[in-house]
Length: 79
Image (cartoon, rainbow, N blue to C red; front, side):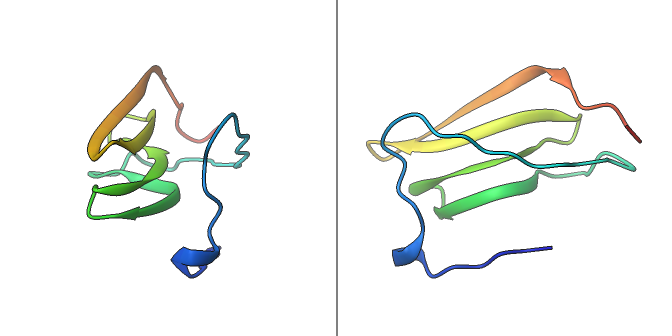
């Protein structure tokens, strides 16, 4: 399932926020598998997803620099 919105209608993040997603991985992807993304060329915006080793990651542009925060814990397969 995918929800697509025009960029000017997407929520802007200013403070705390909550994101909820149910995932059950069959395999780890070779690249990042996005859960939520509102970004343009890693210059503006944010994205949240699952990395190639099952780690969770939040990426955000702060003053034009792309910052990445990833978890050390991994999402287990088939759970």
